[in-house]
Image (cartoon, rainbow, N blue to C red):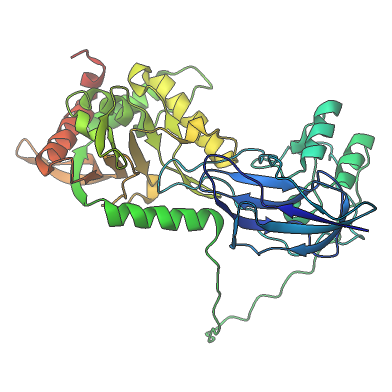
Length: 434
């Protein structure tokens, strides 16, 4: 028998260590070459690490949340024949959709729930189920399985995995290719609900901060520590904007995407930022330089199952209202499903964030470094206001903004929001050349 030592591979881009997100094998498991053993994450992306050889796992280094340096021993195998070997460091197989973090409030990649043990042998493999829609989100399968499915013309989204965390195993793939359909899983007995009435609750739950949540925590901490935030809140009368929005939606062809406030807001930003370029900028701390951007690459903060991400609508200044709405939806859907590319999740010059119906009255958004500003959209509600000396009902929406006070003066920040307010309250002017 041969002892084969596999080291943490060099993941590129100056990475010196990686975090163990999840192990998909355990000590004693027999693995085959190219079988995914683990998922690791750097500050840039999530990466699946495949087995370099076929053999038995003798030891594993670290658990979920532990950092392992590049070149350190990661997995030791016992293989057939030959002398003991220390593995080279091959480039790992990238995850299906690596998700880099372009900003402190972002998660760079999905974090699957760690599963300590393999699927029991008694579990029947899953296959394509007739009439059942494909899964959305990240598909967990080994590089070899992906290659085999691609060669066979099989969509892995239609295959139901029986492995840990829904991973598609080799048996699942073989069953799908052969057309086998597994027997229905036995129904689990429902957990009885506690009886009505008051009862004491005891105990605590400990959740280790790893993966995406760790990156979010670290980067938000850095943003608040290093950037002196200046907050400015202004209410906007969006009655006319709401009327225009409803009119355009009513006149749109059947099947067209319904317009929300976001494309109007981003279209207005494209106009306003021409006069306030210091708000459409980055601070390059290494060079001590403020980089002002002429194009508007609007970040759209998006809540996903893996945490907050900021997909980017590039060159918003060159898009029509409908094009903006379609691109906002496209990149947001890609972020939620885990299919967004690195380019789609990086490079924003100013970020817009909205909690939709949960928008509340006021929020204090954290700047998406290295940007200089972030605009928060709060909930639009009907309120009684005084207009032309009379009390009337108008639709009011607050804008909550934060600025990097090192480089954006309070006056300029307020003036920018006031200019944005003026365009939104008279929405026709958004589309009139200045």
